[in-house]
Image (cartoon, chains in turn green, red):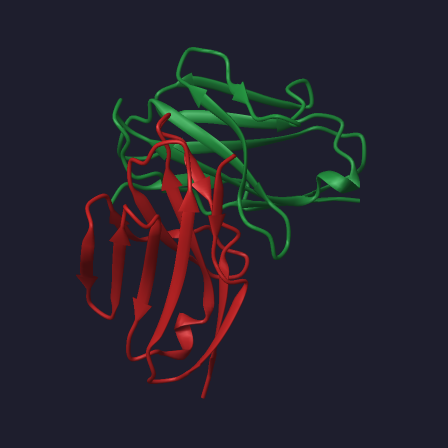
Length: 116
Length: 109
């Protein structure tokens, strides 16, 4: 099956710093990538949808200036959490989809962010 | 609005069978996924149904009734490693995934 990687797997940072998370599709070209956030014991919450070469579409309530998404190529999307605060501590998961019609979303392993 | 309902938690015994239900009300329907998620890990794909009926895959089966807005995931011969959360997700008319809150399945010896 298709493989999606995320880096880093976990990160601890100080409040006020910025953190960049990378999501890569390793063996296929992902026209669309999704960024999710998951708090403990809760389901996945879609943050934004990004299409290669265009601006990301953010879900209601997600600050686009705080969560910067760049989808510069068909195999790489990045999420930057700017000026992170403790309430941003969460499990961030990306997924990638290939093709125009709906296909299965392939998930990355997730990045656990802890902001001190 | 769009809504996916599934039980919050279920408990079953090792070796037994368990059925996890999912009901949905969405704007359009383009398929339903079941994912398994172990604590601290990303979801992994289990099944995809777009037509009515039962799809069997080893110990896991998934059923769909579009007219009733209903699906279930059936797990047979339960093993301890099946303890996880099971997420139901529906593809709506805009080809977006609408996620349920997940069902935490606890397997007891």
